[in-house]
Length: 146
Image 1 (spheres, rainbow, N blue to C red):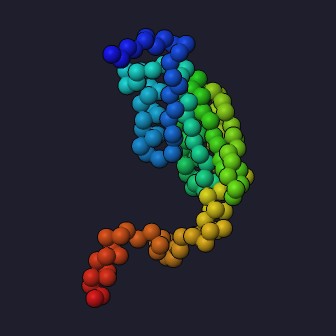
Image 2 (image 1 turned 90 degrees about the vertical axis):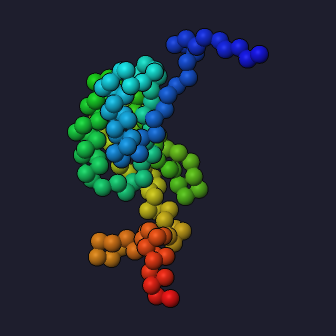
Image 3 (image 1 turned 180 degrees about the vertical axis):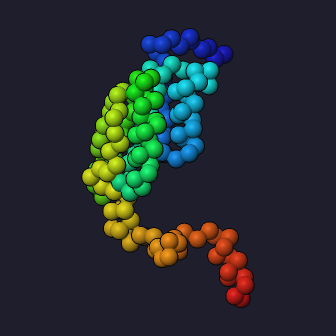
């Protein structure tokens, strides 16, 4: 027989949202912060964690600083920003705050540094990412050619 013990606020597990700064995670975060009925935990247990790639467009910074950081500040939500430390690995904590004021967009090692070091930098020409063409398009092109 499996017995469960009641979990009180002191023993409750933390809740971590891996915040990728895209539409889906921004929507989840906004809903959790503004609609208490949408979650089954107190905000005091929530940590929002973002791994900074170092190559996000500036519009991402502006939108987050203008909209989501004020919401996190007003609710006292813990926001942790991390970055990779070097090519060998490791993690650098860029900021850990319940009163976040800005995104730290670049840490010691960027994703583009890793891609350059491994020779896998995307090819971009005429504003098209040539190496990330969907497989279905590549398959269709091969079928038409052969």
